[in-house]
Image (tube, rainbow, N blue to C red; front, side, top):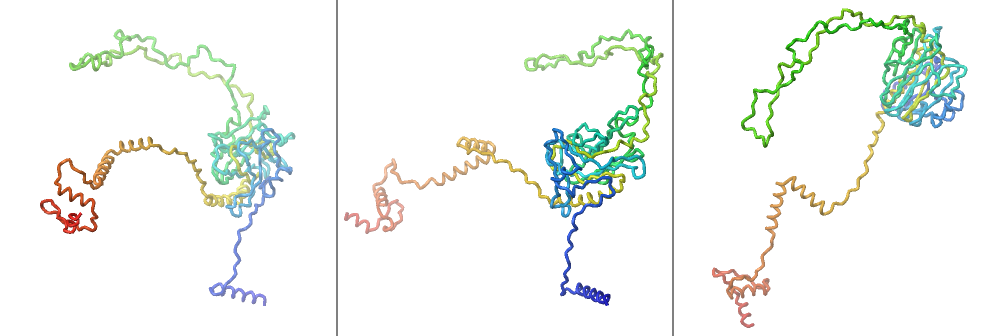
Length: 510
């Protein structure tokens, strides 16, 4: 009966999904909450997910150095950017200040080492680094401190003995992923640092990068950046100074015999300089085939000098030819003796046990994030952990970088300009006329024509020449009378104006 009910319900749901008129409530798929994968396969791991800034150094794991130069260091535990989606909840250790010495460490619960036994045939170190911007100077490498009964991480400084130093180191021309290990000479019991001769470059951008080092019991190593192999090889051959000393060395008491001849060729003692060989002949002589030109003006061009030419008789200083030295023995080398300091180390990978993980660096950058520290004995386990943590977050960071707004360019302050005075205007006008003389000339000519056309109507002034009394009378009448009431009459050919009768009568009456 229950099965039949379930079947009917399923059919109804299918029909409703196919019928657009029927609305079906489908719950939204919310993104899964962020969680850190299991670290049970690690010898020791730190994800900072279960701690805070205030609790970080209150426990027994992480301890700040009490050294004077580390007193101002500021370290915090922070979440990621909100643009990272669910990975915004991922916490990391943050180096807050720039121009700062950092020194702090975490004591391991027990020594970490490889000895070739089952489960300890490899030693793996892995962690993440993220720069907030392209850095110019920042050390972010780890120091795996040498374990000893006297190891006290509170006294951490740059002289504290370490077994391995690994990680990115970028400052000016120094740009490499460091790998240095301390090797003990079993004869002298003295330690010597062995540094990788050619190191890969640091990944310097705004994304997280995971760095992995694996040292194997067969005396080989592997280095990875973002799970890609960047360096591998033998501990015997790729480090300087070399791990093993030479079996034989030069005998310091052996001296070269005084009769030992190392010169392979010598001047021929039987050779004689030819009689015609003139060592004093000059290299150049005057060219007598050239003569002074007849039109040479010494007043304008100076005195004429005879041109020079190569001396065909010049042969230089004579030297005898070289011949093979009959007494030549060869290059002398001191005899070899057994090296008293020689030792054979079949297992340089079996380094001194590690007692703490430390960060002792100098940084000129701020807000550098460190996360997901992993120590273990299995490289595949470390890679799997990186795929579940770094790789997924790395993809989210790529999208977040694309969504970030471009930084605004700083607006330069407006410079206060002085109001130009009359002389500045004149200088500008003169400079413009000099630069565009044709345009200036045409403009001046056009202005002249405009002024000529708008001179105004000339006034009738009394001429210096005599004028007819009749014409003068007419002009005076036109000047004094209201022309709006008196009709105008044309002037006849004799240049006299016919006056209207009414006007004449009025004049006579007056």
